[in-house]
Image (cartoon, rainbow, N blue to C red; front, side, top):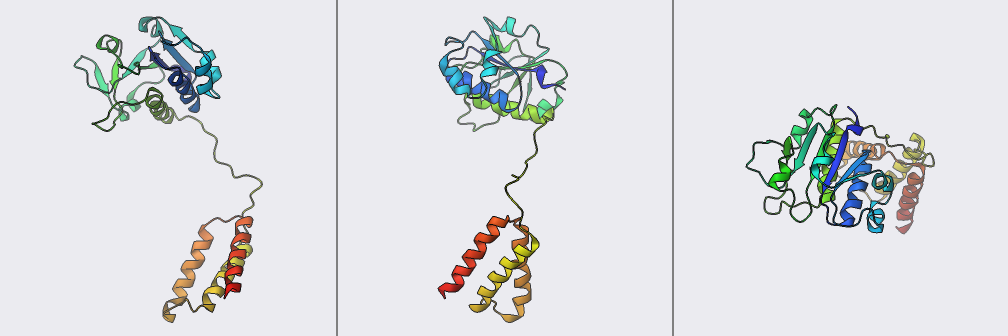
Amino acid sequence: MSKNNISFILNKPQLSENIGASARAIKNFDFKKLVIVNPRPIFPNDKIFATSVGAKNIIKESEVYENIEKAIENVDIVIATSARFRNKNIKHINLEGLKKINFKKKVGFLFGSEASGLSNNEIGYANYTLQIPTNPKFKSLNLSHSLIIIAQIVASIIKLKTKPYIRSKKVRTASKKEIQSVVNLCLKNLEDINFFKPIEKKPKMLQNLKNIFYKMDLSDKETRILSSVFASLGKKR
């Protein structure tokens, strides 16, 4: 499976901001292909570039066509998004159903204009229709919002590689000795105010408190802050 096989086709988009935001959404999930069909605003323009933020390359490399027929010439499977059911002989799938799509083929997701969506004639070019589940009383989704939902789902299906979260080298995990020092200071303050009641429950309470601190994955800086807090509380008495 390759993310290069996926294209996002905006049919007759009306707002520059939505085109730019869609480009940004595409890049968020490391897709490459934005296709524009008969856009209402001049394409490209400053508003589009401004709202695309770091995805200007997606705008610059996008393909622009006069009609859907030209836009889908090299697409194997067209999936049209629609907020309403169409009484047409076209298979309907939900987001879960995207797992059954063969993404080894060239797949194009077709989005309608902000004002009217896709007409029945435009839906006719699709192999499938896809509806994103929303509030039944308010089904309409912003163009870029619906695109980013689909992009995230497809990215997870084709197992988009993402960089694992790496803790900053400037952050040092507190040693067990540092954590124990904080625990002892906390317990001393609690002993001073006669916190552990009834006395027979003290061992269990001590164990639970220690577990809380050790589960927190504290940094050395955080242990110093907590030590200062507990020391200050002790002085207040």
